[in-house]
Structure formats: C-alpha cells, structure tokens
Image (cartoon, rainbow, N blue to C red):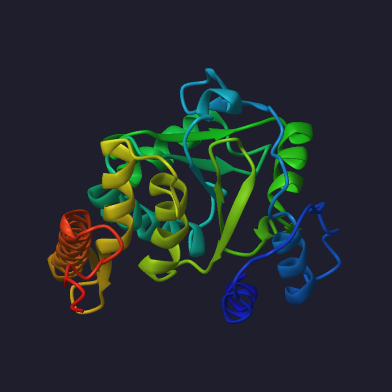
Length: 285
C-alpha cells in the first residue's frame, strides 16, 4: 500500500474531469497506479448519490444532511495499522488550521470506513476516540453495507483491492462541493496544507462575486488576503495586501475626484463665457 500511495502522490497534478466509475479489483490483480489516478481524476465533476450510511453510534446518516457546505471525505479502514492512522492525524491538523481561517462551521468532514464487513459502529467509535475526532467540530465517522459502499466509492473515483487480510488502496481524500459534486482529489497521507486549503477557500469564500453585500465583499477580501506562511506552516491574514488594496482603492477615488472637479470647473467656465466665445475673450475690431 505504501508504494502505491507514494506513486499516486508523485502523479498528482491539477485536477480536471467529468465522471468515472471506480472499481474493486480482484485480489490476484495488482492495482495500476496510473489507472487508479485516472479513475480518481475522472470522477471530478460527478454527482455523489444520496446514500444512507451508518455512523459510529449505529444511527443512519444521510449524505443529503451534509449538503449545503463543502464536505471533506477521508477514505480509510479501521484495521489499518500504517497509512490510515497517519492520514487521519494529518487531516485533523489540516482541518484545524483551515477552520481557523474559514470558520468553525464552514465545512464538514466525513471519515468513511470502506471495509463493509469490518468497519462496524464499535470499531468506528474506537477509531474516532483514538484520533480525537469527536472534539474537532462537525466530523462524522461512518460506514455502510457492501452494496452502498461500492456505489459510494465508485462516485468518489476510489479503487481498492483485498490483499492478505487487508486492503491495497491509494491514500485519497475527496472534497465535495455544497451540492455533493466531486470538486477536488487530494493524494498522499501527508499532503501540503495549501493543497487542502486552496479548494476549500474557493468553495467557502468564492473565487469571484458579483454581490456588493458586506458579508460577500468581506469574504472576497479574506480570499485575496489570506496567504500561506511556509515558515510557520499556517495561513494568516496578510495586512500588507489588505492595506495595498485599501490605499489603491483610495488613490483611485482621489484621482476620480480630481478629474470630476476639473470637469466641473471647465463646465462652469463655459457657462460664464459670452455666447459664441467659449474662451471668454471678447473679439476686438
């Protein structure tokens, strides 16, 4: 699993695509990294179905209940002792940093256990407690029956195969938009924070806005002025960009005011000039 994960991470590029069908590969057939990547990327833009999952308490969890905001979907299986725990802990750190910038209720997170036979509520609950997910705001942990699991993972563009009592699969985290469509795929158990933040900023704050409402304008300003600091490995509000925008706008307003004033003075001068002599100088004979 580690070799595949590293290969998938190397193959990561900006994602574009439409729809795809993931697959459960027979145990005797190894996963092909390039094919796995293509399937994953082809899922971008596709609609995820309205599936009913089962959360860590055994209660039904409808994906429709999670619509209206972006949803980060982390794909794991609870008996994994290597990649999945590392990926979950890294995602928890990334979510904490993202919510500092975007707000505590700006997006939800779903950890989905794709081992339909093993990821039962008790094991999901133990996994959640072990990684402290209950204390991280709106973070759901769930699984589903085999048929629902296969359909859900197909919509997400996720491939996997059973391998010697465990699973061979890529380290994939999927970001859905507010309508439940696949927006971006992230790869690797420890992806860089900007790779996670950029699509969420686009979804939560909006890349463009035609609205002049104060909240929408502030979101646009936050989108432009929130930058990543590689030294602290965190995002911060860059006041330099903010003041640059502010004083730039102020300069434009001042320039416009000067031009308007000159136009008014010229207009007044023309009104005071004698008829037929716009310059105001009398003709001498």
